[in-house]
Image (cartoon, rainbow over all chains, first blue to last red; front, side, top):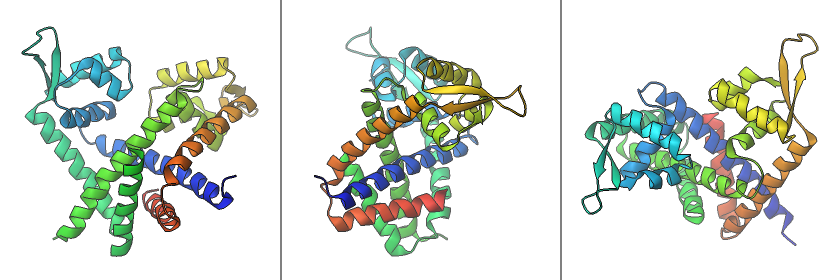
Length: 145
Length: 145
């Protein structure tokens, strides 16, 4: 029999995690609207910076999108010079995706805008609350990852 | 001139919020794969439970998706009896969207599965850490909302 106080805290945290993650996506989209890149393109950019040289099918898996959608998306990103396709040296049938220097610049500009927005929000917290927030987020990330 | 320690904490929290919100979405998708509903359909369900009677164009705005995509999505949800369209009494040209009792059941079953998953994660935290996590998430939600 689970402790009812624990169950209640879990329900509260489930809702807060869902609401906060929706807000993070929403604010992220608002910030992206000032840049020449769509939200799914920016997701792809972040994934490819962390995982250079993914194949198309690996990127589809990581984005949880149909490959036809991701093909269209990466075509557009290649045209706007955010990424490039490179043939694998060992197996010429395989194409790998890499972020270009311009893609890196766009990523950095967007992340800076996100940090500026968040700085404006977090300035309202005391130093102790700020440390507590970072610690809690790190803890929940480690447990869920 | 911003305090460098503050800037660093903001950068850390920006990254953690992004990573945690991506994990929440990912785990949410894994849980949804056991149910007969897609992730965007579940998003629509949550939005319509909180905002009964939205029009189609209001739902498109809230989902940040093209109306053609949302029309297709709600058509499928109507066929699987998750929601129903009702003509507005005052203005017969307007159609409003409502979640059906079956839609409410599906939502509750999914949320219960999410809470079960999260309980398994959070059981590893001490009582103090759990309270700290809930407090931090509530604080950041209030500041960002």
